[in-house]
Amino acid sequence: MKTAELEKYKKKLMGLIPPERIMKVEFPRPSREIIEAFLELDGLTPTVSDVLDSMGIKGSISASRLRPIINGKKIVGPAVTIRYIPESNTTDYGYSNKERAKLADRDVYAIAEKGDVPVFDAASLGDISVMGGLSTLVAKKWGMAGNIVDGGVRDIDNVHKLDYPVWSTGQTPITGKYRVEAMEINGPISIAGVRVNPGDLIIADDSGVVVVPFEKVEEVLEKTIAATRREDEVVRLFESGVTIEELSEILPPSKW
Ligand SMILES: O=C([O-])CC(=O)C(=O)O
Ligand SMILES: [Mg+2]
Image 1 (cartoon, rainbow, N blue to C red):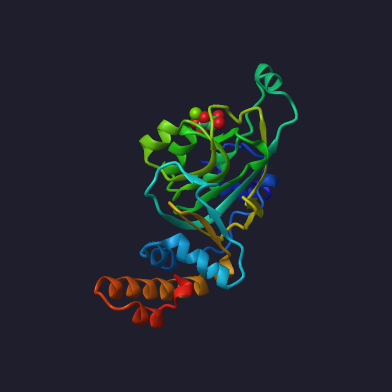
Image 2 (cartoon, rainbow, N blue to C red):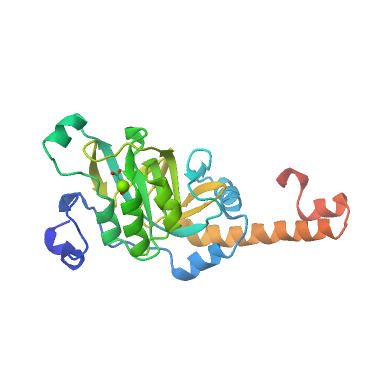
């Protein structure tokens, strides 16, 4: 983006990434009503994952790959994205030459809206941290819903203390400062092999993370509500003692 277009964010932007690497700041997001409707549902990511399967959409990532740092959290919100690649200098070089760290997470939060979900593509770095306690503090203060990190996170005790939802592939003490370079904010990225565009809906809970493409959000919500009702009905009838034959008429055993 041009520096002038970023003018309205200048009180928050720290200049951690050159402005031309911020691809966009405005894009369509799913409405608040849609987000609230998803949040009301139980058993959320498994049901949405089934719906995505039925629609031929690859969008599900297991919690064994992207683990919640705090269990029992559930978030739903539009994605804002950041992509990192490794720095080619050695860490010693950056450290002793007092180079500016190129972790740009705070600039992602600066241009995001309240309720957004920052999504980090840092898989090529292995277990190197791209966010920690300070990052968590800013994300929480500026109203992010939670972070999804295909990469490492540190200061895990602070993430717990701040009670902020984060899913990550790694936990590590090793800082990303001097080891990474932020290539792009709000471009398309991939996390655990799943494509994420800014504005896609991110849903995450203890079972994992699902990515719903922006254009499919309404259809996925409708189908998820229907599937949740069907399953709730099966549970209710089973608990009230109806036979398996009767239950099978509502939900065929192949769907259990
Ligand atoms: O250096 C890092 O990896 C980030 C960090 O510790 C923080 O955000 O507190
Ligand atoms: Mg730290």
